Length: 185
Ligand SMILES: [Zn+2]
Ligand SMILES: [Zn+2]
Image (cartoon, rainbow, N blue to C red; front, side, top):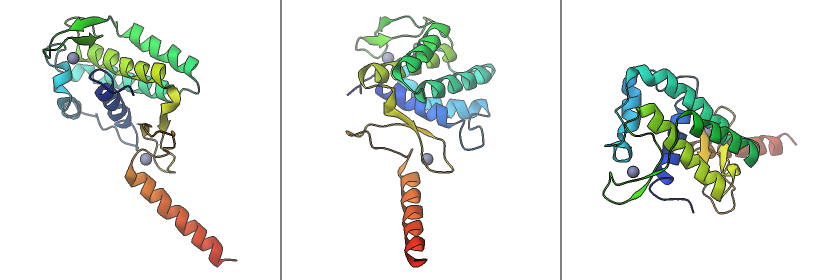
């Protein structure tokens, strides 16, 4: 599918970033939280973007909302409009980068901020999914108390939950409902 250096992990990072804003508390409330999130992706940005600054938190929260809007678009045309706006706003410009030794595509402005790297990289990840598979690869968790987004990599696009934690919880709840119904008959 679309999994390679410049889509798989950027998509994963986009999902992680979006989900820092779900569940009632901001999980990138502090600059340290953001540093921690990005540390796991250092190999993607080392040498091409500046480390994150506390002053960028607000802009990155806005990016987070924009990415979520793309993922939950009702159709590809709507998603395309939203993702193109991000690419435009964050100054995406394609080029071949050698920072990891092997030539591959990068989209952030040269010597840009973390915000511009994060915006262009995650948006290109989403763009690749939309182009290759369609925006319906993305979804929001169907568990009643969870709004986390996910990318559905299942063959038949049957995924409904963000995690096995949520799907297990949903299955247990459904089982309990059926049992209660059976007993009340
Ligand atoms: Zn790279
Ligand atoms: Zn969930």
